[in-house]
Image (cartoon, chains in turn brown, green):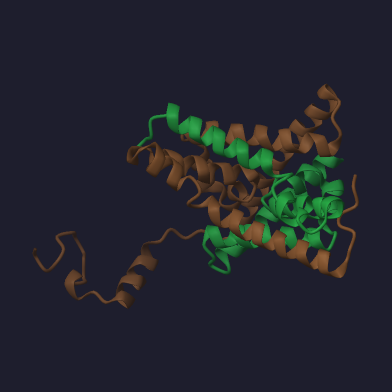
Length: 167
Length: 116
Protein backbone atom coordinates (compact mmCIF):
# COMPACT_ATOMS: atom_id res chain seq x y z
CA UNK A 1 0.00 0.00 0.00
CA UNK A 2 1.37 3.43 -0.89
CA UNK A 3 1.59 5.72 2.10
CA UNK A 4 -0.04 8.73 0.50
CA UNK A 5 -3.31 9.06 -1.33
CA UNK A 6 -3.45 9.57 -5.05
CA UNK A 7 -6.29 12.06 -5.04
CA UNK A 8 -5.45 15.58 -6.09
CA UNK A 9 -4.79 18.11 -3.38
CA UNK A 10 -4.58 15.62 -0.52
CA UNK A 11 -2.25 17.25 1.94
CA UNK A 12 -2.46 14.59 4.59
CA UNK A 13 -0.60 11.37 4.83
CA UNK A 14 -3.29 8.78 5.41
CA UNK A 15 -1.13 6.49 7.52
CA UNK A 16 -0.23 9.20 10.02
CA UNK A 17 -3.62 10.86 10.13
CA UNK A 18 -4.68 11.27 13.73
CA UNK A 19 -8.28 11.01 14.85
CA UNK A 20 -8.37 14.75 15.52
CA UNK A 21 -7.11 15.62 12.04
CA UNK A 22 -9.59 13.25 10.46
CA UNK A 23 -12.42 14.89 12.34
CA UNK A 24 -11.40 18.38 11.24
CA UNK A 25 -11.17 17.29 7.61
CA UNK A 26 -14.50 15.49 7.76
CA UNK A 27 -16.15 18.52 9.31
CA UNK A 28 -14.89 20.77 6.52
CA UNK A 29 -16.50 18.57 3.88
CA UNK A 30 -19.75 17.99 5.72
CA UNK A 31 -22.62 19.73 3.92
CA UNK A 32 -23.70 22.74 5.91
CA UNK A 33 -27.37 22.62 6.86
CA UNK A 34 -28.72 25.19 9.21
CA UNK A 35 -30.67 23.99 12.21
CA UNK A 36 -33.35 26.56 11.45
CA UNK A 37 -33.95 25.25 7.95
CA UNK A 38 -34.05 21.68 9.26
CA UNK A 39 -36.63 22.69 11.85
CA UNK A 40 -38.83 24.42 9.27
CA UNK A 41 -38.74 21.34 7.02
CA UNK A 42 -39.42 19.03 9.99
CA UNK A 43 -42.35 21.24 10.99
CA UNK A 44 -43.89 21.32 7.51
CA UNK A 45 -43.49 17.63 6.67
CA UNK A 46 -44.20 16.36 10.18
CA UNK A 47 -47.24 18.58 10.37
CA UNK A 48 -48.30 17.37 6.94
CA UNK A 49 -48.16 13.73 8.05
CA UNK A 50 -50.29 14.58 11.09
CA UNK A 51 -52.70 16.41 8.81
CA UNK A 52 -52.98 13.27 6.67
CA UNK A 53 -53.61 11.27 9.85
CA UNK A 54 -56.33 13.69 10.89
CA UNK A 55 -57.99 13.35 7.47
CA UNK A 56 -57.88 9.53 7.67
CA UNK A 57 -59.26 9.63 11.20
CA UNK A 58 -62.12 11.91 10.09
CA UNK A 59 -62.78 9.48 7.25
CA UNK A 60 -63.13 6.52 9.62
CA UNK A 61 -65.35 8.58 11.90
CA UNK A 62 -67.75 9.74 9.21
CA UNK A 63 -67.87 6.61 7.01
CA UNK A 64 -67.86 3.91 9.69
CA UNK A 65 -69.45 5.90 12.50
CA UNK A 66 -66.53 5.37 14.86
CA UNK A 67 -65.78 7.49 17.91
CA UNK A 68 -62.51 9.41 18.17
CA UNK A 69 -60.87 6.70 20.31
CA UNK A 70 -62.18 3.84 18.14
CA UNK A 71 -60.81 5.52 15.01
CA UNK A 72 -57.33 5.89 16.53
CA UNK A 73 -56.07 2.34 15.93
CA UNK A 74 -57.23 1.94 12.31
CA UNK A 75 -55.80 5.38 11.52
CA UNK A 76 -52.39 4.34 12.82
CA UNK A 77 -52.64 1.06 10.89
CA UNK A 78 -53.42 2.89 7.62
CA UNK A 79 -50.50 5.28 8.14
CA UNK A 80 -48.24 2.30 8.78
CA UNK A 81 -49.37 0.59 5.56
CA UNK A 82 -48.70 3.79 3.62
CA UNK A 83 -45.28 4.09 5.24
CA UNK A 84 -44.37 0.46 4.48
CA UNK A 85 -45.39 0.84 0.83
CA UNK A 86 -43.41 4.08 0.46
CA UNK A 87 -40.41 2.48 2.15
CA UNK A 88 -40.60 -0.55 -0.16
CA UNK A 89 -40.48 1.58 -3.28
CA UNK A 90 -37.71 3.73 -1.83
CA UNK A 91 -39.69 6.96 -1.63
CA UNK A 92 -39.84 7.30 2.15
CA UNK A 93 -36.09 7.49 2.55
CA UNK A 94 -35.89 10.22 -0.09
CA UNK A 95 -38.45 12.29 1.83
CA UNK A 96 -36.64 11.51 5.10
CA UNK A 97 -33.39 12.98 3.79
CA UNK A 98 -35.14 16.33 3.48
CA UNK A 99 -37.49 16.12 6.43
CA UNK A 100 -35.21 14.77 9.17
CA UNK A 101 -37.27 14.42 12.33
CA UNK A 102 -40.38 15.36 10.34
CA UNK A 103 -40.59 11.81 9.01
CA UNK A 104 -38.89 10.10 11.96
CA UNK A 105 -41.09 11.33 14.81
CA UNK A 106 -44.54 10.41 13.43
CA UNK A 107 -45.59 6.76 13.76
CA UNK A 108 -44.75 6.35 10.06
CA UNK A 109 -41.06 6.67 10.99
CA UNK A 110 -41.46 3.77 13.42
CA UNK A 111 -42.85 1.59 10.61
CA UNK A 112 -40.16 2.87 8.24
CA UNK A 113 -37.37 1.82 10.60
CA UNK A 114 -38.86 -1.68 10.94
CA UNK A 115 -39.55 -2.13 7.23
CA UNK A 116 -36.16 -0.86 6.08
CA UNK A 117 -34.38 -3.09 8.63
CA UNK A 118 -36.41 -6.06 7.39
CA UNK A 119 -35.57 -5.33 3.75
CA UNK A 120 -31.93 -4.58 4.44
CA UNK A 121 -31.30 -7.92 6.16
CA UNK A 122 -33.43 -10.08 3.87
CA UNK A 123 -30.28 -11.54 2.31
CA UNK A 124 -29.37 -13.11 5.67
CA UNK A 125 -32.53 -15.22 5.60
CA UNK A 126 -36.03 -14.82 6.96
CA UNK A 127 -35.39 -16.03 10.51
CA UNK A 128 -31.97 -14.57 11.30
CA UNK A 129 -32.14 -11.64 8.91
CA UNK A 130 -35.72 -10.38 8.74
CA UNK A 131 -36.96 -11.73 12.06
CA UNK A 132 -33.84 -10.95 14.03
CA UNK A 133 -33.22 -7.44 12.74
CA UNK A 134 -36.71 -6.00 12.34
CA UNK A 135 -36.61 -4.43 15.80
CA UNK A 136 -33.00 -3.35 15.59
CA UNK A 137 -33.93 0.35 15.50
CA UNK A 138 -37.52 0.25 16.72
CA UNK A 139 -36.64 -2.00 19.66
CA UNK A 140 -35.25 0.77 21.84
CA UNK A 141 -38.49 2.71 21.46
CA UNK A 142 -40.54 -0.28 22.59
CA UNK A 143 -38.18 -1.16 25.46
CA UNK A 144 -38.05 2.32 26.94
CA UNK A 145 -41.73 2.96 26.32
CA UNK A 146 -42.70 -0.28 28.06
CA UNK A 147 -40.38 0.25 31.04
CA UNK A 148 -41.58 3.85 31.45
CA UNK A 149 -45.21 2.73 31.24
CA UNK A 150 -44.57 0.04 33.84
CA UNK A 151 -43.13 2.52 36.32
CA UNK A 152 -45.92 5.04 35.74
CA UNK A 153 -48.41 2.22 36.38
CA UNK A 154 -46.49 1.22 39.50
CA UNK A 155 -46.62 4.77 40.85
CA UNK A 156 -50.37 4.88 40.25
CA UNK A 157 -50.82 1.51 41.99
CA UNK A 158 -48.70 2.47 45.01
CA UNK A 159 -50.35 5.85 45.44
CA UNK A 160 -53.74 4.21 45.06
CA UNK A 161 -54.78 6.48 42.24
CA UNK A 162 -57.75 5.42 40.20
CA UNK A 163 -56.04 5.05 36.85
CA UNK A 164 -57.28 6.84 33.78
CA UNK A 165 -60.82 7.99 33.55
CA UNK A 166 -62.61 5.76 31.06
CA UNK A 167 -63.85 7.60 28.00
CA UNK B 1 -60.05 24.05 13.00
CA UNK B 2 -58.89 20.67 14.31
CA UNK B 3 -56.99 20.22 11.05
CA UNK B 4 -55.05 23.41 11.73
CA UNK B 5 -54.10 22.36 15.25
CA UNK B 6 -53.24 18.84 14.09
CA UNK B 7 -50.77 20.40 11.65
CA UNK B 8 -49.29 22.87 14.14
CA UNK B 9 -48.98 20.58 17.18
CA UNK B 10 -47.77 17.63 15.10
CA UNK B 11 -45.24 19.89 13.40
CA UNK B 12 -44.03 21.31 16.71
CA UNK B 13 -43.43 17.84 18.17
CA UNK B 14 -41.33 17.05 15.09
CA UNK B 15 -39.41 20.32 15.61
CA UNK B 16 -38.63 19.24 19.18
CA UNK B 17 -37.26 16.01 17.73
CA UNK B 18 -35.22 17.92 15.14
CA UNK B 19 -33.75 20.18 17.83
CA UNK B 20 -32.75 17.12 19.85
CA UNK B 21 -31.01 15.74 16.75
CA UNK B 22 -29.31 18.96 15.62
CA UNK B 23 -28.64 20.95 18.77
CA UNK B 24 -28.13 18.25 21.38
CA UNK B 25 -26.52 15.87 18.84
CA UNK B 26 -28.52 12.85 19.97
CA UNK B 27 -28.78 9.79 17.77
CA UNK B 28 -32.22 9.10 16.22
CA UNK B 29 -32.65 6.15 18.60
CA UNK B 30 -31.98 8.33 21.64
CA UNK B 31 -34.34 11.00 20.32
CA UNK B 32 -37.19 8.55 19.74
CA UNK B 33 -36.68 6.85 23.11
CA UNK B 34 -36.70 10.20 24.89
CA UNK B 35 -39.89 11.28 23.12
CA UNK B 36 -41.63 7.99 23.98
CA UNK B 37 -40.68 8.29 27.65
CA UNK B 38 -41.79 11.94 27.60
CA UNK B 39 -45.16 10.85 26.20
CA UNK B 40 -45.48 8.16 28.88
CA UNK B 41 -44.70 10.61 31.68
CA UNK B 42 -47.07 13.22 30.23
CA UNK B 43 -49.84 10.62 30.19
CA UNK B 44 -48.98 9.73 33.78
CA UNK B 45 -49.65 13.31 34.79
CA UNK B 46 -52.86 13.28 32.79
CA UNK B 47 -51.57 15.86 30.30
CA UNK B 48 -51.61 13.87 27.07
CA UNK B 49 -55.31 13.10 26.75
CA UNK B 50 -56.27 16.80 26.79
CA UNK B 51 -53.65 17.40 24.09
CA UNK B 52 -55.17 14.64 21.92
CA UNK B 53 -58.59 16.14 22.46
CA UNK B 54 -57.26 19.52 21.38
CA UNK B 55 -55.01 18.57 18.46
CA UNK B 56 -56.42 15.21 17.31
CA UNK B 57 -53.99 13.41 15.03
CA UNK B 58 -51.40 16.14 15.72
CA UNK B 59 -50.92 14.48 19.10
CA UNK B 60 -51.89 10.89 18.29
CA UNK B 61 -49.67 10.39 15.21
CA UNK B 62 -46.23 11.40 16.64
CA UNK B 63 -44.30 8.71 18.52
CA UNK B 64 -45.02 10.43 21.87
CA UNK B 65 -48.53 8.99 21.62
CA UNK B 66 -46.98 5.51 21.62
CA UNK B 67 -45.67 6.13 25.14
CA UNK B 68 -48.93 7.68 26.20
CA UNK B 69 -50.92 4.71 24.81
CA UNK B 70 -48.72 2.23 26.68
CA UNK B 71 -49.47 4.03 29.94
CA UNK B 72 -53.13 4.42 29.01
CA UNK B 73 -53.50 0.65 28.55
CA UNK B 74 -51.60 -0.12 31.77
CA UNK B 75 -53.66 2.29 33.84
CA UNK B 76 -57.05 1.25 32.49
CA UNK B 77 -56.35 -2.42 33.24
CA UNK B 78 -54.86 -1.49 36.62
CA UNK B 79 -58.21 0.02 37.45
CA UNK B 80 -60.14 -2.99 36.16
CA UNK B 81 -58.02 -5.98 37.19
CA UNK B 82 -55.77 -4.67 39.94
CA UNK B 83 -51.97 -4.89 40.05
CA UNK B 84 -51.60 -7.55 37.35
CA UNK B 85 -53.25 -5.09 34.95
CA UNK B 86 -50.06 -3.00 34.83
CA UNK B 87 -48.33 -5.82 32.97
CA UNK B 88 -51.25 -7.24 31.01
CA UNK B 89 -52.54 -3.85 29.90
CA UNK B 90 -49.41 -2.17 28.57
CA UNK B 91 -49.87 -3.28 24.96
CA UNK B 92 -53.65 -3.14 24.94
CA UNK B 93 -53.96 0.10 22.98
CA UNK B 94 -50.77 -0.05 20.92
CA UNK B 95 -51.33 -3.62 19.76
CA UNK B 96 -52.82 -2.48 16.45
CA UNK B 97 -49.83 -0.32 15.61
CA UNK B 98 -47.16 -2.83 16.56
CA UNK B 99 -48.94 -5.77 14.92
CA UNK B 100 -49.54 -3.81 11.72
CA UNK B 101 -45.92 -2.69 11.58
CA UNK B 102 -44.63 -6.26 12.10
CA UNK B 103 -47.05 -7.88 9.64
CA UNK B 104 -46.64 -5.39 6.82
CA UNK B 105 -42.88 -5.11 7.24
CA UNK B 106 -42.64 -8.89 6.97
CA UNK B 107 -44.88 -8.96 3.91
CA UNK B 108 -42.76 -6.24 2.35
CA UNK B 109 -39.63 -8.30 3.01
CA UNK B 110 -41.33 -11.28 1.32
CA UNK B 111 -42.43 -9.36 -1.75
CA UNK B 112 -39.87 -6.64 -2.33
CA UNK B 113 -36.40 -7.18 -3.62
CA UNK B 114 -34.05 -5.02 -1.57
CA UNK B 115 -32.26 -2.33 -3.53
CA UNK B 116 -28.54 -1.86 -3.27
